Image (cartoon, rainbow, N blue to C red; front, side, top):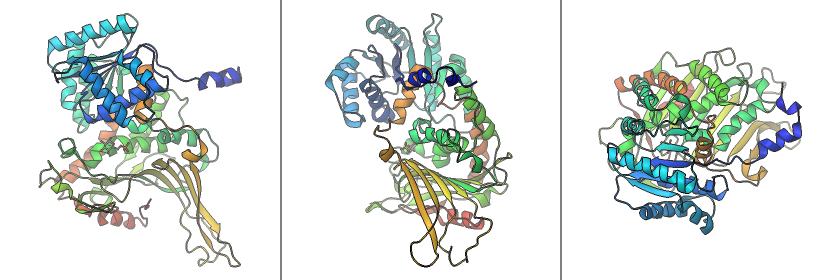
Length: 509
Ligand code: BG6
């Protein structure tokens, strides 16, 4: 029975209360990295500023640098000033700084982990953190084993006194299915599955959570969300940036492993999944796992997948170098900076409906969207000249930027003759709500501290995603060179050809 039938007002009020984390702290490994400075530290400050952290909240940095607590606090201060979303307030900062500590050491240094142990005990006494700590592994996957082993060895991973310990893991979760399995079993030697939170920051985005709201809180979309009405689905994650200073991470990984294995397949899962029995983590994971398990690759990977690399070109009025000329990139690299893959979903809802996924760096502009494109009307009473300019109906979930939802349909052009053209009906977050959206990392860090696992992919989802991608990567490895596309364009001609062969075309968002 729906719980709100009991006392609808109280239920509503309870759910609207801000979710505030209880006594706790966050330990960041890899605290000198980009992610930590640009996303994690600012998110912690923004949460504090919004009153969502407990008064004694503690932030501990662990790194090799020879820093004192004050040096670490200064780094956090600068990162917050530069990157946080909410205004800087001295009183919030003064409170936050009380719980800041730095532990110096290498990951294999036992002494350093003993110091970390003592630091957390000290924080429990001085800040009232209650033994509750999340360990954020913002480190390369090659360091996961040593850090998790050390946490276990030094008694930091587990508690028997009712307090909690959690591990937060950043992608990439492996390089393929085999390495992902290896990584998962290593992490699970130290932490049980319910202690592990894998970050896919796309799931922290408001618009991504809105996919489920749109589909399952309304009645008008779900009846047409299936093979009887949908012609195909296009999921695009386009970036205008190149690889910047990330050559070391990116080369050899490429676009498909970097964002398709995680962000794009999660978007597909949310778009295609069945309605979960409830909005709790188990029910959601069960449906996402089911649909990922039903994803089927095309038989001919040469025909229905494309990988490519950007060459020199123009981006936003500036000259951009090609991928092979970027600093730190092997000039013979065959790493993909663009990937397009067509998949099917083998179930009754989606049989025969292709899902086209594409992503790339240095494309025309930054845009992430899911476009559900509908079939043409089966019969038209209008002469074909009347509907010449009419495209297919579409529902477009705009993940970013200009977050919102667009419905495209045909409408009569004003005038004395009959002519029908596409028009757009728009919902824009910025216009409909006064609250601005929190950053994905704010939401996800808060959820870790609350122990709310809804927005974190499970082991099975990660492994299924690799299972989908592995044959594609293997095919690419053994079949020639990537295609090329000039920076600032919408990708290689081969990707357009791939769509054309199906009688379709990519959207130009
Ligand atoms: C990360 C990828 O996961 O997502 C990056 O590693 C990419 O390569 C980034 O640039 C994009 O995130 P967002 O939130 O800016 O779309």
